Image 1 (tube, rainbow, N blue to C red):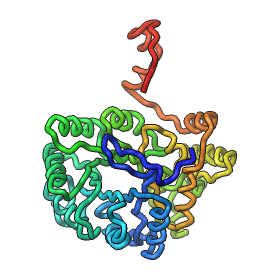
Image 2: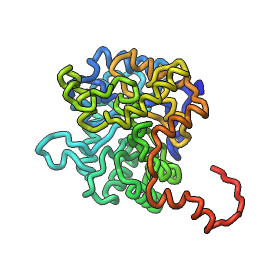
Image 3: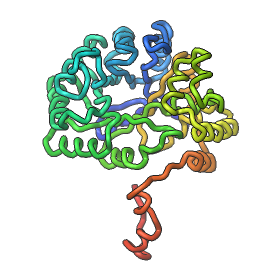
Image 4: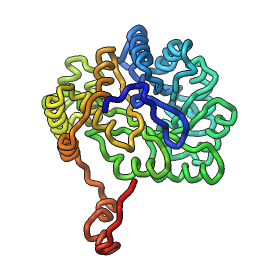
Length: 354
């Protein structure tokens, strides 16, 4: 593979050039009980940018706003060369019904607040963070398009939403001449592959770049968890706030630990760390544009960036795929069956192109 952070990729059907790994900044600040203090966060930022990285991902409520505030300070000298992405919809003020959700009011006020924190006149990319099941898609798309026309944001994307809603929005944007979605943020890793059912194929067809978060399964794929971590009890007793968070979410399971075991064996064969091998697996997928990596220390970030130099063999890919395979379900499994192919095409031979 031998990629570098300054070997840029186009984001979706846009001309925006982004690094093959994005720097996630949910670890910038310790407001959530874990993360990096300001000086360490600055080291992470400088390390990423000095190596040619240009894609920085944050959100309006990451570490209660500390992430955006730190980035506002860190990006003062090189703002123009960076692609700065943030998100809206998560509640910014408890008790204020319009400080969260996808409405136009939430959108505009969240963007204005992010601009102040980030000390910038515009956002390169704005994601709808979480689907709220209540705001009409016309309101969302028109509100985003208005902000693009006013120069407040340059590109728009979406995260954590049903595939059918995303495809509906993209079609509507095309038909009405509104700003199209250029990026889709989903959770995707060896332990979370359900996006392969609809979200990733949809993004490919709709010209939307996929920028997955949690490509190491919340740390499970790094090999840091053991069988006795299947409950949060030990993690809490040891003061591991992030660890107990992952356990409570159900990320630490027998299945996921089995996948981590196979990944560890593959990493040993390659002479790299499990984290590097896990990221390399995500990077080799042609449907993935830019995985988002997070780190709390420079050592962790350097390790993650080492994934750019890892080449998985066909045999290793097959083993990892087998260990983490998911059921595609209906109708995908039926449509891929030999029986259906036979009743549709018989013995017809066609060259398959992508």
